[in-house]
Amino acid sequence: MMPEQVRAESDGLKVTWGNAQTSTFPWFWVRDHGEDVASLDADTQQRKIDTFSIDGDVRASSALLDKSSGRIRIDWLDRETTEITSSRLAQAAAMELDCATLSNPEEKSYWMAGSLPDPVPTISYEKIMDSDDGALEWLELIEKFGFAVVLDMVATEKATEELAKRIAPAQRTIFGTYWPLSAEIKDHNDSAYTTQFLAPHTDSTYYYNAAGLQMFNCIQFDGKGGESVVVDGFALARKMQREHPQFYDILTKVMVPAQYIEPGVHLMAERPVFRLDRKGELAQISFNNYDRAPFLLEADEMKAFYEAYAQFNRLSMDQDNWCKIPLRPGMALIFSNWRCLHGRMGYVGKRYFYGCYHNHADYESRLRTLRAS
Ligand SMILES: [Fe+2]
Image 1: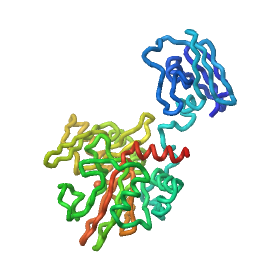
Image 2: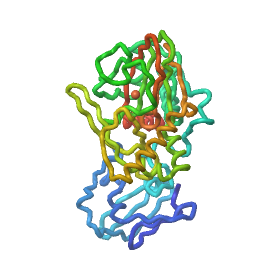
Image 3: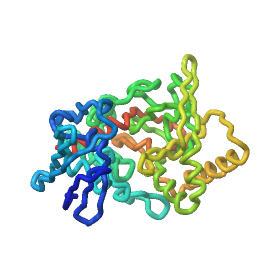
Image 4: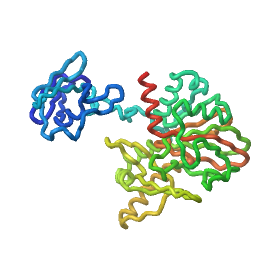
């Protein structure tokens, strides 16, 4: 949105927007966010101005808007001149989508019982490999629905790695960079490496930089059952916010620790079940009762937490809220481990998956750059 008018006032830069709303930006902030060549590197957007040498009472004498470029020239009382753009101000005033936000939360497609994605979002392997438009379409599906199924996938480890590299280098964890997943593998004592039913959960609750995306390619399946289960954690959290706001509130506040132990490893991290961003929007779900570590709250708070936690568990265990995907060779599943819970039906027979994680920041970076190109 473009300003109609800008004015230098005593307490800051006053902007009147096209919709007649006004915003005032404190002078110190305006100086710290200069976009002229002396204040900011235009290519990397790295700050050049030394924030710590700006006078706390810094003030401008005039502000001049160039409507054709959207740039605002600021003349300061200390005789310096800087510039700032209208779009920087519009983002900061939430008149435009902040560049740190991937998509408007209202534009995502949330799904649960009664609104399951039908058909499930799919895209072909070839399309993703062939062009950046294909890669972008893939990431937009993940951004909108929280997951996508890749069809006509080549059932090999090599193809899994090639597919993953269309996003970014995979994220290395104690499980390695790329990992085989099968009940025959005994490298890790984790519940994932069994044939039992796995209740919906998120992975890496015990990492501060929990996996952002998780991907499995079905290399071999010869048996019965074993469908992958995906649950839209954001949809369930939003339902809780509408119907049980007090439960939602508790789950956004209580820090829940998690841990992973095997010989030579003891990982621990903690965050709330619903982590919010600075605007109060859902940023990340962390829910893994298998990996929760001991913690004790004051009695009333502990009771309230368990009630809220159980309510979220009921929603995530309700099969009507599940998207069940029978993965077979030729199919790969990718989902946001920050938004979706995943589980697996028990199975008999032989099932061999090959997969990896991606760091959430790497996924966001790829999506931003593909959108811009
Ligand atoms: Fe898992």
